Image (cartoon, rainbow, N blue to C red; front, side, top):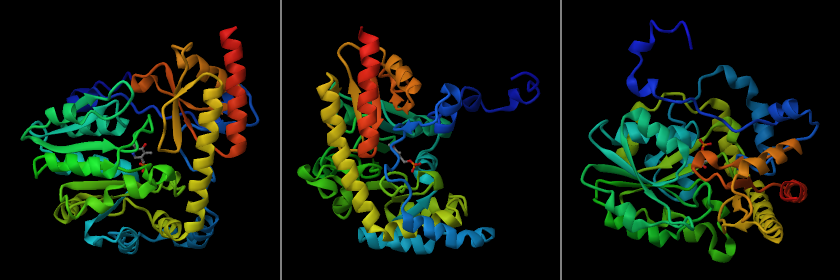
Length: 380
Ligand SMILES: *Cc1c(COP(=O)(O)O)cnc(C)c1O
């Protein structure tokens, strides 16, 4: 970036060392780059059924209100979330996607250069970037080779300066999850001032045969464990990734501090209306969970039948590897040529693996065919 040398010396050292976020590639970009008419995107764990028809209707009806500022504090949405989880609305903070609350927690709960945060490695990229931006040390314990959680190693990283421990369950990118009792037990081992933040972006996809959301979500543990916080998003099962809406359920005292510094209108008016409609549309959510459960089985069985290893997933994606593939970027390239966007995991330090979001039955079928075709070409 030439010509900016006047400003560069005055940019903070933290920012100067930052790399730009590299987003997944879009459908439009791949159509253009590979000259394709149809592209199927199974890369960002978005809702396979798209946007709920009820949400679309509400957005159309509310379009004329876009000139208004939203109501500060999103009181109607906060109330609805409180009712959904049967908790005090004073514990709820709504945000511009979960991304915003992750960023805010590092700034609100940790003094830069003094306190530290703890997570597993690899973890969701935002934990790494936003802790660094906030000047907060992030200590990371490796996941076990089978991607399960090693809580003993995690606990050894916690000291009296640790204020946040962040766990994603079900985890991204593996789909591994632990039952709520395990998380509650771990929360009890932390110092009382140390917040256990459980990112439950995918928890409602947990398998019914394993007890479903009830068995995995820590909401029922909040009364017994005042140091647990929960993060939820409207981006996945509720199909609003593009509108940016998430929330945290925090200890009341902490929620009050976060509200003091959250930008007043970071949840926009249409996102709030859409969020309310999405909460009301239990039919759409039910259909989503059913399509994901069936599609996950279809993808797992289809990939295993083709010789791939699949980590058992409690989420709306699967992580796969193949004994004869060390560089999954090559498989990814073959898929792009055939019009499929999945997520190669090189940036997670897992170059031999792909993450595939569960699509509709048709999308899954076409993807399985395409992978078979790519592998036939690669291995012969
Ligand atoms: C997708 C995802 C989220 C949701 O992020 P939004 O900003 O709400 O879209 C949160 N945490 C994890 C681990 C995710 O994979």
